[in-house]
Length: 407
Ligand SMILES: Cc1ncc(COP(=O)(O)O)c(C=O)c1O
Image (cartoon, rainbow, N blue to C red; front, side, top):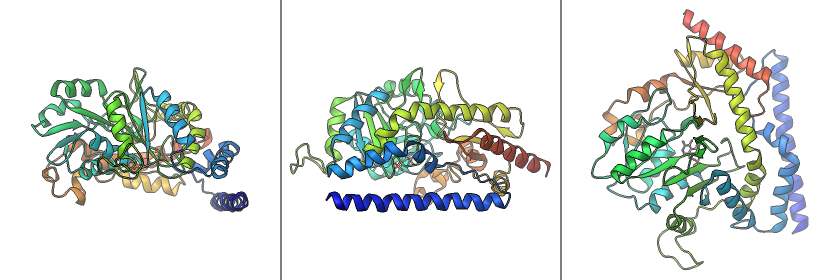
């Protein structure tokens, strides 16, 4: 066993070294051509900053021979629960599972409606569909990209069971007002925190304000695993017990099954990786916020660029730094030519996606979501992004938008 592990580990190390060498080579070739290459995110930079601890943690799991539901999963759930201030933290295989199992545990299913926005990643509404419920869309607040609480009450019907705010890009949705409306109408609140771990409102971490918080540890997230992973937080003990059963085939005891569940477990290697990363999360968030502040300090004076809101009393964790610009696709192209990678989250709002063509919402208009899909552009942001790279991003966007506004 030990010999096999050593061989496997050596092979893995060699393959990682090869990847790192290839990346360096690509960078070298580009810079020889006079082109700076600034990726939107550089996960290898983070890995190399943690390499010794990370390699040791992964090796310990390999040596232990325990890969599912072991000590790292238990410890991680305790540590992340404490970090978030949640009474219960239940780890899962993905953020998508977190969302749909939250609906299962809350008893939401066929015939029920869940109010959310069409300006999000498809996993949000996919989860509603998986349990047989129907997403009911309302528009976003154009200043925050998040659900507009002023539109919620008119969307409530006899079938409404829950509100699903997404904390998009790491910015808190207006949870205090959403909670007030939910309480008044007897609705559950499921927070999609996939992009917002560590964000808070008045010191209360997102994922602990609604009934349930759903997190993703997809590798690109602010706290990312080296594979898929997810988490549900709740302060409701009964809900937590049901979720713990649902993630292992619907039973509290092995081989005794009370309801149909699924297999959705975070594995030991991913839990060990997340335990190495969690103590660095606060520092990484502050680094992201410092980069965002630097970008905003320049872009706020550029009339052709709209900067993201960073509201007092809330902590935006800048999973993405997303601006609005006119002629966005041309600006994106020009930045790529200058060696700066940018992304569009998301180019098509969900009511216009084929998957939702049968919904009544497919024929409705959501002007703010549609406009955001035309204008948003996310810039490189990650804790290791150097000041000189930040300045190169700034220069590239200023120049791209100036050229475009002169056309
Ligand atoms: C807003 C949002 N919700 C849900 C998810 C789903 O998470 P996962 O990819 O872990 O299933 C994601 C992740 O990409 C997301 O960005």
